[in-house]
Amino acid sequence: MTGRPARKSAAQLQAECDKFNAAHPVGAAVSVKLDSGEVRETVTNSEAQVMGSHTAVIWLDGISGCYDLERVTALKAAKA
Image (cartoon, rainbow, N blue to C red; front, side, top):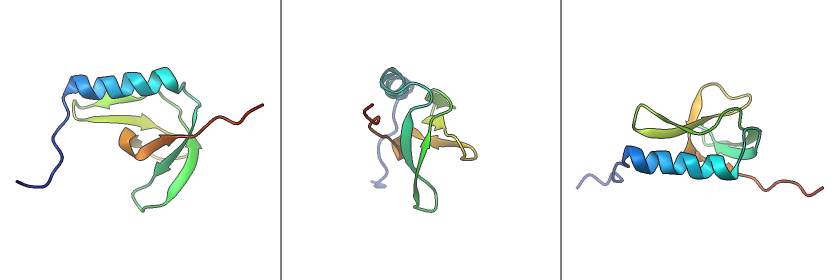
């Protein structure tokens, strides 16, 4: 046993993306854990999507490249 988590199927990854996209439109406020460990608040600038049949990802404003959706947390919208 390698200690690695079980690989998700393409259907599971797509379901994660669909759930995220249904709850959080493009422009939603999120926090993301960067590679450095820093947590940064930003907004989404794409819908979540499956990349290469292996990872659910999303693109974020002001951050180069996409990030694994597992490292992204939606922030509660401010009340008007």
